[in-house]
Image 1 (cartoon, helix red, strand yellow):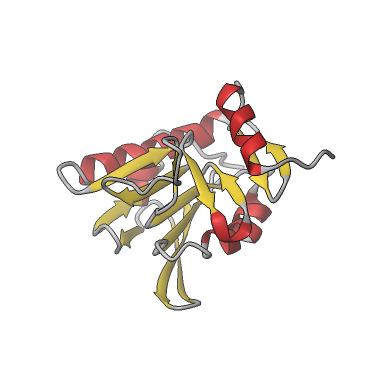
Image 2: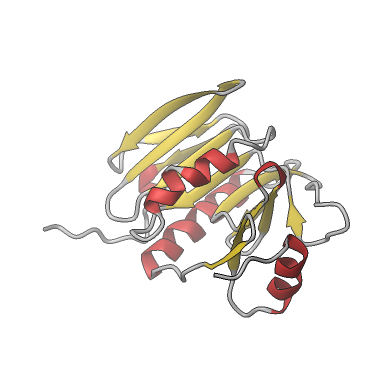
Length: 187
């Protein structure tokens, strides 16, 4: 595997037709999502956009690059919210660095990374107040809320009747709405 600099990565990423993460010198291609993954992510984005109209937040979905300077990483969260205007990486117009909320729709290929190292990397950003993990195969959400320095409260929600409050933006989300377009296997 070839190691490159962040500058080399950013140059190649601007011209690339597929997205890549940069992990401390390594370039990792991001797999395309399933239709269910895309439905859930798009629905969550829509619910947030509807609830936060006329509020001072920017909401990004899938293609917005995030810089994690402390761990020398670039990634593309499924959904993230920043205060408006978002803080951009110095000398860049395409890379944000101050999300208050990050959400990932879990995939078989990324679930362990999203729960583990990726969450560890996201926590290096002082701005991050909430982290949401959304499952595809059943109505289930894991929600982490920052309580203090290196202290996070974990809550999980199961079943379509459940709802959770995103405290950083004061938005309540009902799982029935989040999973509206998803048909679950009954096996």
